[in-house]
Length: 480
Image 1 (cartoon, rainbow, N blue to C red):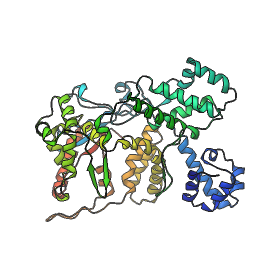
Image 2: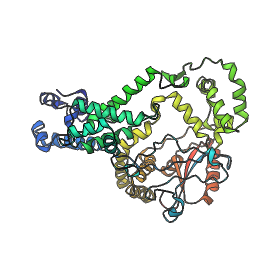
Image 3: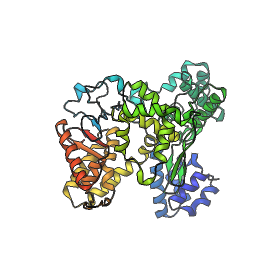
Image 4: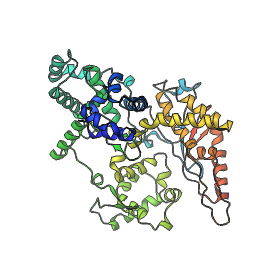
């Protein structure tokens, strides 16, 4: 019979009347990708409904065929000491100069630090992004090489490769071999969705009659009310192995990892994740409020004081809430180039299951954003806005990473501006589309424009009675 996923999908696609038919024909999530045009014609005789089904099915198939994105080193320079506002500066070298600045992959956009006065040791290239995702950066079908190098793998290939199809025993064995390979040197290694999807694709390369959806189906949003968590044999195997390691004490979790924030109504309450009394960390908090060096001490005290710092923020009366600027002034280490890492660590402790949610989900929505951008551009009467959106859309075809950047840049144009709250003695302000774009990501063509851009923004916000918050600035000649 049809499983709950298929039922949910048909309901979301407005085809609930065919649920019984799919159940009768035993169509489940694993056989959905195998449906041919003739099969669909038999299942859904009405042309209009069939067209709707085929369109949605194709979109769903694209999700399952997501390829790994090339991710070049992402280093974010967050240096607020150079000017009074807070900005996140990303420099993308122009094509004319990329040969001299790009160390490895010249085909992808590279995000580079432009901060000569900052020691390399203080910069972190992580920012929550997975590395080595692209097949072009790894050996072709590394899994096949691994299977040929071990006895169990050779036996698996000898038994099943000619048929190109595994049975349940074979699927269980290959999942166990993959998990063993990935975790053998580091049991605490975090395997993200992109990596699991890549491994599932390699299985299908070796055994062509297998299906990716058997081993991994990424998180999917079928509609505003129906969301499905990631699942599959490979994901289950990873989770089971980690549970075994935790039970055996091989994986040791830090105390903070057991203490996410729980949402109750509109409030977030911090659970106790340390036996340390609040009074014990007053000296460390005072030190953080007055010092930002040495960095290793900053990181140590940031962890020790996390419970009390976050409680102070969350327990604050709504009328006395911190602004981002206030919080960064209170803790000067946040103004350092690597200061954003401190905020990321706080977030990861509050929401441990959300660490890579943007990376996992954004590829699922990117194409929709670009499509909406095209529709928006065709309906615009303002030639300036139309030109900007079309420039970003043309950027999306340059590379996979460029298409991600284009989708982010187009997002502000899909939203409607709202009037900012009017402060006493100040005029009401409703930002234009261009102001919304610059408020999200500001694009300038050279460093010489940086100081003037920030100063003008600060002066304008001051006249409006609005505090300038941290912003992202991209420095690159031409269209981003």
